[in-house]
View 1 (cartoon, rainbow, N blue to C red):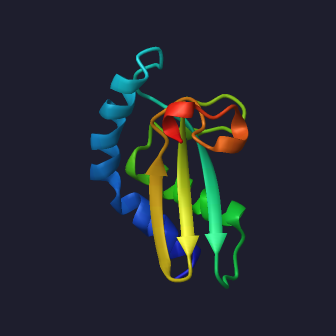
View 2: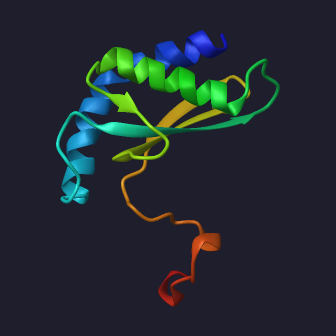
Length: 113
């Protein structure tokens, strides 16, 4: 349980990571090929003895153990990885698009309403 479980789950996601990165590369042709630099983002809900920052660091550590060429940065990165923890569930996501889909980040497209 806890951060060690997050680290282990991220490491176990190696096959999914290796399948997701070519899709990410195809959608972002201007991005470099491996090795990638990722920014980890953590979101946490429920009662835990760790912070969202701890969760994202644990997820990144797990991914790095699965893909040793992977590095992390918060200022200069190629991709964004989300580690989401809520109660006793944990999931990971890879942001495929460059721009945020959040309505608060810019004008809404009328076609999406």
